[in-house]
Image: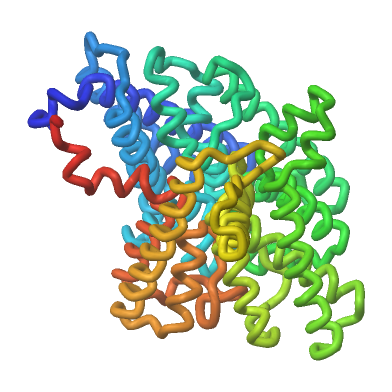
Length: 489
């Protein structure tokens, strides 16, 4: 990194990474306490991990002595990418040191899947995990759902002048809603909304028969749209319509732009009702749900309520990139697989914890295509694209087009690379869509009721990389591979 001293603030980068590793150590303390509460011995592995994090984090802080607090855009992108990578490397330590996931590839995969809220797992014996490890799995998703850096900015605003660049580098998206002029206050408001949703869902799940531990873990995994369960059979374990409907509601709530909850507090309900992205997202969920529901009712002999609930749950779970499971959709008619793949790619709303392309981009590209047809009839007409009754600037429309083309190109490359590792074409399609969309379940052998433990080693590393770039919306990570990023020009 020394060769790039002129373009990177190395000491500030070391400072931020050091602070964040110490923050991760604090999360390990929580997990160790859970282990102690349940009188289980895995607390020792969290203590080992705490010591490792403190040692490395302290070393980074020593390197950052007299650091200039200025953070440039380049610094921000590098810090965010390195943070997610380091959190995964150090976050896998409890699994690996404790022998619960004794393979480095699998331990890295499981942790990356957690932090990126993908929810794909290689664990085949989940119920054998002690409570501390299960809590850590769910907590990785809750931390990653909000964003590692944003979470830290909200609860520990220590980055000074670098806050804006760090927030922008991690909270990638089409547009950023300004909840508050101060970035730290915006992060704090988002964190409060996130916490309130988690607490309310925990209470409702506990009321429905879940233990407090299971309710907390599943609320972590729902509000983060992560999908890690404490049971191998996921939500199907409880066989409860009440629990399923509660989780459906909170999956959808967590997949909407968190700024709408701020508007609710300000009683600006009309802005929510007329929000184009929300209508686009909810409309997509309902249309796909109804299409699958009729198929289950007429061709699979489900009763009407079960057909509605099963289809709504799986569509909501996949469209929001949450990934919980109540039914094996591999047994459903194959045309429904196409609809679910579309849902994986489409994703939730901007400014939420959901993955995918996002509904805002989908709406913009649809309106742009519609305008192209109109221009064939009225070639001199000026046809602006409007979202929420406001004209979308041409540069935003251009960035949307670029993102979608690039997303599909990376998708195709990932699909091809997975096929090259020996995974069949259908399974590779599902794995690619699930990984880059941070969804969790795929298709076929790696579908709803199966783990990904059987993937070739190289395929797991490819999937892990797709999870990371999908979570940070491609550019924040891939820009590091651009010569322009490292150029002094």
